[in-house]
Length: 505
Image (cartoon, rainbow, N blue to C red; front, side, top):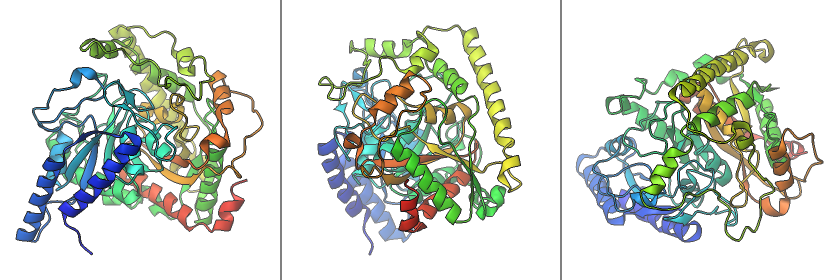
């Protein structure tokens, strides 16, 4: 059966509006504009018999950072209300060239630098699996919309986990690409000018095929001709065929059971056991990952993020007089935090406006840490049995599933990849099962936040939530990361149910 773009766009609009009513996920709904575009695409296909591009007629949702001519891009700040964009950002230009139909934009937190989604303009976005829980952030509007099947494909951004956290919390697939592989030019952002750890854009979808289709389409569109920072690197079929990974026939994965900072909740441990069993049943090798300088890497990245002492946030808030949001806890605090201070504040200390020289030292330290981690990864060749180092790492994206609003404090697993610029994907594995995912006895806590996260776990709160994991590859190997995630996803789907049950202990 075939559908016109108008039919498909109309159908997703109806579903998106339902998602908005339930989760408050949208910031912009431009029906007339999108349907006009869809009709134009339908007419072209009728007249020429050829699609405009690889995304012909496909409605696509966009995080409220991607500027579209004639529309506001509020990005969670009151000061941006009423300011229409003069032009499209490069991504929107390329989506139009590929034949796509941008049709809604989605909610973000004030400042973007939260793992949840709430601001003074549009309010709080909720998780469709349980509206008492957060969908994550900062691409939380996309996460909620896609989980509600209100969009076939969404585009978010990620500087410390903002694609992966919502995808894990909402049962989705995503790709966090390496720096400058996809075009960010013209999109608005927080901390603009901060280039030590670049924010990147990526797709969010209900299937890996959606992730691949978008990524290939944009890379094939030669984005470096419009964005001077994008690497001149087209989609590589040889890399997708895993020619640098033994052709993908016998891969070696390493599982990060615990990063030494926060221990994952029981559903995450079960998901990793399920994934290990599935991969071994498919003929791949699985070893344990030995974490390397994880806390040093995290401290360095978080210190870079606050190198301006919070000046950027205050400047943006002062433009309108709105208060800076300092907590994501709702006023009723139905689940008060057991954490007096996030561990990151203990690590970094009181934020201060650093000098240029101090920032240079942090950048130098980051470069040294990247080299150290690269060498550590290369040394795994002695343990894989394939003649290659570990092909990919599998870890939690977050130490827990979706949590009550205001309680998402963990980005220890995701920020690692932003600091080291590792390409990575998130994929869903299972759902929290109150009969299988029982609370564990206390372990030796790594720090006070690890203890607070341990005490947060309750099957009453989390039952039924999606459980996702993260596959981590090397820098600039997006094609291989997509292919390896497809292999993991396929292995999980093929594993017999009895084997799955035995892996849940």
